[in-house]
Structure formats: C-alpha cells, structure tokens
Length: 295
Image (cartoon, rainbow, N blue to C red; front, side, top):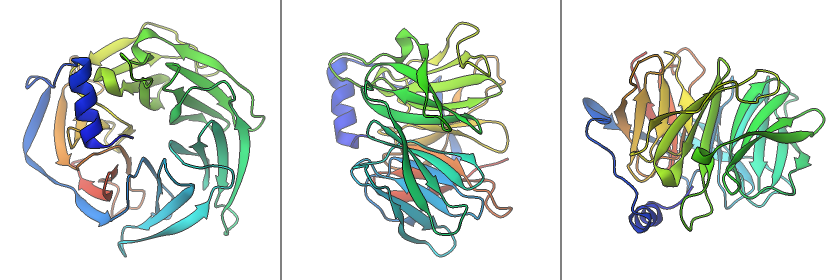
C-alpha cells in the first residue's frame, strides 16, 4: 500500500509499538521469497483456477496476469473507469470483484476474453482498500478512511455499513485504518496497518453484522493484507517488516511466525493447482514473489 520508507517514518512519528520477540517468531527455515516477476508496487493478488496470478497496483488501472510457470507478466485487462486498483476477490467461477478508487468493478474471465464493468460507486467512501468475499453475491469492503466495513451486493450494487469499530479507525494524522480483510466460517479477520494490529470479529452470515465482540490478536506488528492457506492457517503480509507470517487461528494464544521474507510485502494468495497449493504468491514493492509453506 505504502512505500517501506514511508511506513517506517509514519510508525516512528506516531510512536507505534514495534513487534515483540514473543509475538513474532522467525523460523530458522524461513527463506527469502522467490521473485516470480518484477512489477512495481503490487497492492493485491488473487489466483485464478487455471493458476494465473492476478495483481493490482493502486497507481494503474492495469490488472496484471502473472504466469508462475513461465515467470512472465502481461496486462490481462485495463479496468475502464478506474485510475488505480486495490482489493480483489473471486465471487463466482472466474469472475472477480476489484476495487478501483471508490468504485467496485466486475472483471469477468469466464467467457474467454476478459471484460470489466462498474458495479457501483460508493460515493461517500473515504478510502476503499481491502476486499473479502462473503458468498457468491456478497462482498465485504474495508473503508480505511472511515474505519468501517461495507456489505456490498454484487448483483444489485446495494451496500450498507455492516461493521464499525474503534479498532478499524485511522491512527493519528494518517487517514488510513483498516487495511486487509478476509472472512471464513462467519469470522472476519482484519488488520489496521498504522495501529500495528490484527483483529477478528464473528458476524451474521447474511447481514454481516457482528454477533460478538472484537478480539485483538496483537498490537505490535504491522499487518497489510492476509490470506488463508490450505492448512487452515492465516498468512499476513507485514509490509515494512518484510515478512509473511503464519498464524494458527485455532490456537488459544495465536503467535505470528515468519515463514518467508519479501521486501514490502502487501498481500498474499495461495496457488490453486496441485503443484503449487502450498505456495503463497506474495505481492510487494518489487513484484510478485513465491513463498513455499508447510501444509
């Protein structure tokens, strides 16, 4: 989302806590991520069923297609109407939602030649960033500027405020709060990048309204976006910390364990073919990287 130098300066200016050695554990086997392709400032990634990685950039409306086997990249499509792209998620087979500014766009690969169209503009949004797929017609969209989550219907374009909590609010003078967001088994997991915090909250599967209190997992490690692995564990990109960390959501006291290093890591998504199901594709300031994890 932001350059590494900016994030470090911002954190210092806000007096934010640094990662505790008790919380962040480095495996001796944590290796450097392998660069798949070099691209500038990748914001978010998703993986198609055919194994192609899709990558966004907040300064461009190009949705990039990355071939992990050939280690090549190309522009899959230019999303008309957007000036930059951020969160992305697949809500139907080979059909993706992607955030472009205040708009939510549909990018459809199911017919062969990709097509893009604007679903709806959230005119009152502050700064849309993270996106999670609740079901095949519903998205959860994080507004980092306003510190809340919208429930968004991809079929009608209807949206409403679903979750708002102090843990999602911007920190200090930087108008950016909740960043990454994902949902699984009716629990929303999210980061607040400038509060160095990671949280979860149970929700109603239909309304997306909270059904319980927010639980804070940590407040001392920067987190950008996140993804679920095939082993049920959560992986969080730590941006200026330069790592991909693994979290066991079933643990009584979850710890963050570094499983790979990627400079300026912003996001992650796991491969979908048999040969790369244990590979996390990580977006970063210098492109897309591959981190192999134990599953």
